Image 1 (cartoon, rainbow, N blue to C red):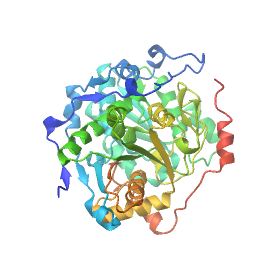
Image 2: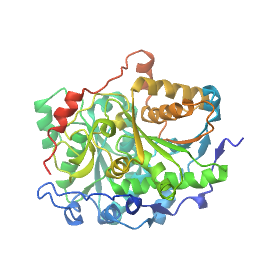
Image 3: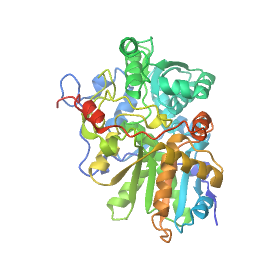
Length: 447
């Protein structure tokens, strides 16, 4: 039995796949928060380089990956496709389970797939400095790494609860030369206002985005970079699924079910969207997006126009949302604590193509421990959600020989503090009260 399939460097995709033209029903455009009219690239150019804005709005199905970007991606790409046969054996299932191992990147997650091209396009347009937010720290680490490759300064606003929970993420960012502050911070007007109102706030990605945007818009040499949600991020992440299709073909197999964890949507969409044309051609594939019960944007949120941040400075995006001022509890899957879901993923849920599932953190950690014991790799808390989703699928009917493919979005070697708390019984399941979600959704912009 083949354990893993590794493509040669010259088999790495040289184009990204843009799913936008293939989405049934299409996407609604982002709106200007002031006029409520569709927003053109001119206004967004204040915080994003034109190279990325062109990709954000492109209707071209395939977009070339610049050679300079390919050269850096080849440090770790193509990533392995691995057959989880030891996990299969432990479960007693006839299902075949494959995972795409994105934990082999320099920072241990899928995030550099987009951080590198984002840093590249900023560098090409003369930008000297980038700001960003980060939840668990994986995106902050990825952008710090990418910025160092193109001699850019980088400042990261890290959600306070993760800043305290994950000290070695900060160490990694420092090693790549970035500056990190806990968000909300005293460095921005937004941060100072929130700290004055709620000094003990755990922070949120929505707050950190507001701070990073405020910072970027205050300096001529600075642009903003976002690690998920936007179309161009999912475009860059499509390299995962494009490689997986080649590797599954070599394995002589094809997925019946494709699974990923969902926070903003980038890692799941990166694996799933290259399979959408096959699905639309009649291939039977189930796409399962797994989110935390404590931040259930897809399963309990509303499909509506909403801001991506607390300070209401982003364009209005049409997405599943819990409300821009939603403050999630401090679960340890920090990368899944975002109030909104990528418009691309939201549209595919709207069309009943993606099935959203919400899971509690304790069952996900248990799945991660089983995976570590069987496959030898300790998964990040976020990735544990995808693993639990795959186990649920594999054990629905132990005699069903279905093929399951999931995205192993990152390893957990810098998340061992979370595992310590799990073993000590200090982690708890948390279901966000419906009345609290209703209160947050009441503040959606009136469109």
